[in-house]
Image 1 (cartoon, helix red, strand yellow):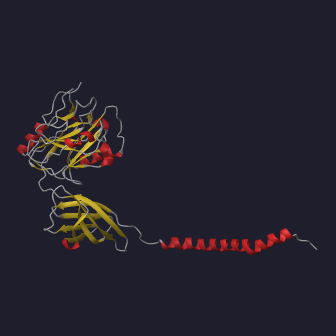
Image 2 (cartoon, one colour):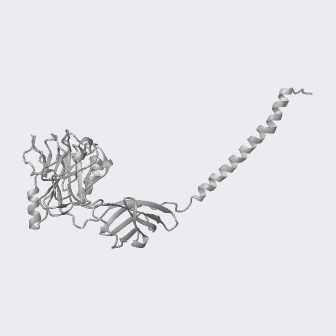
Image 3 (tube, helix red, strand yellow):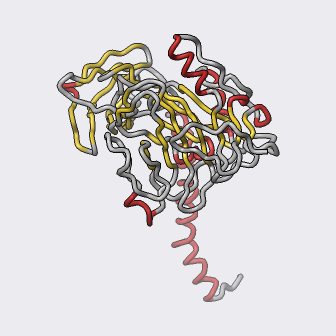
Length: 364
């Protein structure tokens, strides 16, 4: 007969009383878990894709079009201004065309041109998948002037800062017009404030605001064009200031001018250093492609096919050379001349001319 020690008896009693039941429970749980996992995968069959809001388009004053990835219904629509509800569904009429939802805003709801607004709601597809959304937009401007890019400075040395100069070929209001830099892609576009401008007027958009000069960096949106007192302000010329001290423009860049946020590209310029063989990000190539598709650029897409920016400094800018030809075409109702690398050059030292006629003397 085998004699069992007291220690072994104690171990066996603990094993069968505690450990063995735990092991059996874990085995059962693992089997159940496997079954749950299989059933869980099976339950995912069918359409569980949430609708995607791909674009907001303004078709006119008080007219919005929301484009979705699939046909949807809309509920709980609200229109906001500065986080305050302006109106709700009872003042918003809806029409659905395929994957597009057309929204008409009641006439008694006044939206100011170029002012920021927001639209929220819930989009639901045919099987019940829903998307809660909030999309910002700007008040529609019916009187946008014909604008072109004129001059660009990409360097800064205090107190001088980078700028993009615009030239107005016709009169109108610049509210909601946007400037975009591919080099500045992550920061998005700059939206111009409401201001009535006259044909022949220059608008200088300064692309940096130093904190110590901020008090004098005033957007000149009225008739007085000398309220901006910062050192780089232009006398008797409309100055606008992009907030922030971060550098935004690059020596190699693609700058787009749109008639409104998400609207048509009405003008652009692309320039690069001669040593550049490929764009540093996809944003540059995409911007040029968009400009070509909208008819704003008739030049090439690659860095060696755009305007050369070699030698650009805070006093040597890249300047347009065919403004007079464009003016003549506008006055005579003729097609505008092409916009390509031959229309732009880096001007000689000390020839930067914000708010004035561009120099035609090249930097050598």
